[in-house]
Each structure stands twice: as structure tokens, then as C-alpha cells.
Amino acid sequence: MELIGVGVLVVLSIAGVLYSLLSGRGDEQDVIKRRMAGHSAVDETEALRKEAHTSVAQKMMDRVAPMAMKPVMPKSDSEMTGLRIKLSTAGFRGERAPAMYLASKTILGGGLALIVLIASWAQGRGLQGTLAFTVFGAAIGFMGPNIWLWMAARKRAELIRNGLPDSLDLLVISVEAGLAMDGAIQRVGDEMRNVHPVLSEEFQIATVETQMGVPRHEALANMARRSGVQEVQSLVALVNQAEKFGTSIAATLRNQADALRTKRRQAAEERAQKTTVKLMAPLMLFIFPAVFVVLLGPAALSLYDNMINNPLMGGG
Image (tube, rainbow, N blue to C red):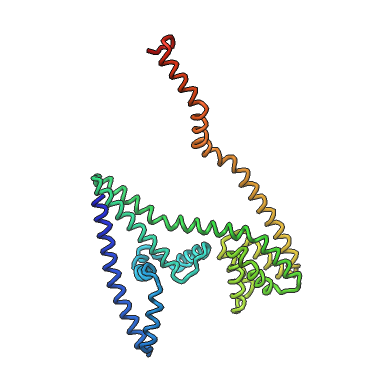
């Protein structure tokens, strides 16, 4: 334990020294850039005050991320585009999201490998065992962000899937009330902000894209790609086909809303039916042993006392 503590302190000390060096150099470069741009000392003071509100961890990640992401940097633009799509599916659309994600893989992998290496060395394991545990820790740290991203995308897709029927109902009402499709999408995005914020955000992004000049079918296709939900992709395809062939969009949306509501109810019934099967494991592991102890414990103790005290039953 003492060796582990010493190793952790050494790592923290090295990280602190590197951060202080990088931070000082970056601040000097920022001051030089502001002075070259013609800003006054008052502007520099205000800028420094705003930068002070940023957390130390965020600053450190901003400086370490470019170096940490190099070992796992995608080799082509198509791979980077796929990574951005995965991150947007999970709800992370920031400019720094890919860099932070890739850097977290390297940092977690190297950090866990170093911790496991120090712990194995402190326990006196052999070379083969130390290497095996170190590689295992590095693999867990490297794959951890992938699992976390998959879970986040799955949770977000479930939220979108649950809020889609209600949003389609409001969309049908808006279209039948005389609003155009763009106005109806904007109204749904505004009204569903507090009820289904994830789906409301997607509608708002689609509205902003159409206001910037992107065709509506392309904006809806982008929304379907960002969400990663099959139901949204089917909805976008149906809306585009209805506009292309001139059929009623309101009727198409109403039928799709009914189908999605039925599918949501069936999914809820399926989860309810699975509950009895999922309860078997906790019943067998936690509840049944306690019940057996309560019911059979007194009888077992009485039988043991009789066996000890009664000579005819083999007692002394």
C-alpha cells in the first residue's frame, strides 16, 4: 500500500509540473496574441477574468487532449465522420467532443495500466502475471469509453422513441390547424421542450437548418441520422414520400403516430412479461435463503439439541 501511495503521488506530481509548464506557456501566448490584435490592458484583464472561471480540469484536458488523441486518431476522414455520427447519436455535438473522447481512451488505458502495474509490483507478482494484469487493465481502460458511449446512445434512443408518438400527435394537430410543415416542426420543438427535451432538441436543430437554407428533406434526413433511431428514419422516409407523391401529410403522420403508439405499448407489455423471469435471480440468491433460514432454522436447532441430549439418537 505504501508503494502504491508513492506511485500515485509521483504521477500526480509529474502531471502538476506538466500542467504548470503548459499553462504558463499558453497564457503567455494568449497575452501576446491579444496585444498583437490591439487589445488594451483592460480587455486583457477582462479576458483573463473570464478564463479564470474555467475549471482547472477542463483547461488541463484542453491541453492534454491533442497529445493524448494522437495514438488513437482515425486514419481517414470517413472514420472521423463515423465517430462524429456516433457521438451525435449519444448527444455530444461539440467541436471538442471527438478530441475529448479519443483522449479519454488513451488516458484511461494508460492510467489503469500504470495503476495495475504498480499494484502488481507492490504485491510481488512475477513478470508474466504483472504483464498480463497490466495488459488487461489497459484493455479495460481503452474499451471503457466505447461501452459508455454505447450506453449513452442507447438511453438517448430510448428517450426519442418514447417521445415520438406524442410529438407526432402535436405535429398532426399543427398541420391540420393550417401550419406549414416547417412551422409545425418548429411549434413541436418549442412545445415539447419540457416534456421530451431530447426529441425537442432534434426538432429545433432541424428548424434552424431549414431557416439557414437547407432543404427540408435534407434537414429531416440529418435529424434521422443524428438520432440513430429506426422509427425516426421511417418517419422521415414517409414524410418525404408524401411530399413527393402529393398525398396528405396529416394522414401519413396520424397513421405513423398510431403505429408508434401501438409499438410502444407492446414494448411496455413485453418488458412487463420479462419481469417475472428477471425476478428469479434475486429470489434465488437473496430472498429464498433468508426464508429457508427463518423456516428451517428453528427445526434444525431443535433436531441438533435432541441429537446431542438424547442417547438413543446417538448423543453423549
